Image (cartoon, rainbow, N blue to C red; front, side):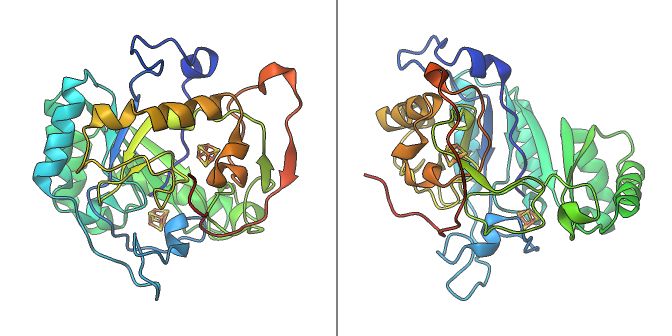
Length: 307
Ligand code: SF4
Ligand code: SF4
């Protein structure tokens, strides 16, 4: 259930203001992917093109794996002990409500002073009134992905449906329709591991020397414990380590993570294979007053490993 990341304005202007000895602040947001499955195959979603065995096997069949409950609770405990009180989601490239533990996990996050939020395609909620009531009571806000509309009228109709079905919830929408930008409003943007597509709402370009603060904001842990650098890092290609080998604190403040974050804040996308061909927009002006180096993106599939 990928969503559009928001960039904290404080981070864009003052990325080195942390009290930590490494020079980077603690993450603002925590994603723990509790399980690997999704019931959809959206055209704009990297999981649809995965054949690595992370989400889909070589034949394109979904893999069903989940992180043990005790590990998830342990990660929440670790985050709490670091003083984290921000937003927590239980998805990455997966549908969180396919996990029957979802409400329990959200309650556990809340019990630890965090703010759980739900990003869902909504399919499970359509026929489950009790679950609708539970998500309304436990989640700080709910983002519904609207993917089936072809026109703006259908988009408005979908929004009305959910506003009625989840009355009282703090509801937001992520709207990417079947036809993309051509016939209806869409926020479908190019993604590093998604082939170029005419339905994308903005031109498919790379920004070789532009800053990217995204890895400074979210700590993303996949269902197998791998830590991702950002939402584009579907396969854990930055090799940031695994929560089964290291603590959250060790992983977030590792020399490797700090170096990658520092590179990207300085606009050094060229240093990292996935960033070299990433179409995600600059998060600030290019350092040293240079012009942004813009070029058309060529989809190259999953990247080779960095050293
Ligand atoms: S519903 Fe979400 S996770 Fe599933 S394929 Fe679509 S965008 Fe990806
Ligand atoms: S530039 Fe690199 S760090 Fe930023 S979103 Fe793209 S792949 Fe991720």
